Amino acid sequence: MSAVQLEQACPSELNPLISTLARVHRARGDEMLRPTGISAGQEQVIRHLAARSPIPQNEITRLLGVEPATAARTLARMEKSGVLHRTRSTQDRRVVMLELTEQGKAICDPVADVCHALEAETRRGISEDDLAIFTRVAQQMTRNLERR
Image (cartoon, rainbow, N blue to C red):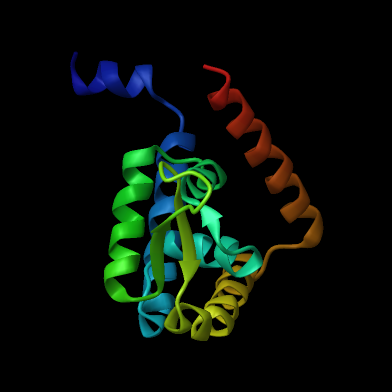
């Protein structure tokens, strides 16, 4: 397929726009989270564990909407950095339970501050009406792609 044929087959700016938004949002999140010692994506684990802890690892995997191997790698990095620890359930030794450490609890407020600041920065210059439309469209696109 030639470049012209490829351009004709994929004329939309939508796919690159979505990729770019996701990439720059994650990069900015990483930059803002750096002082807390975690990276973008890990703040969701912190948020869930701060709300309810201990929690089974398979529940975090489900809440994050990722593959078990992806969750396991993320959680291993977070455990190594000292923000959470994993233990076996006392009721079912097959179940791995996750809990924030004191270090993890100490970064909850700074992580929440970063999340609020990132959202404010992302929303800057966008009206509430436009944001509502964007939200509905993004949710529908997500549903469209999840229906595969």
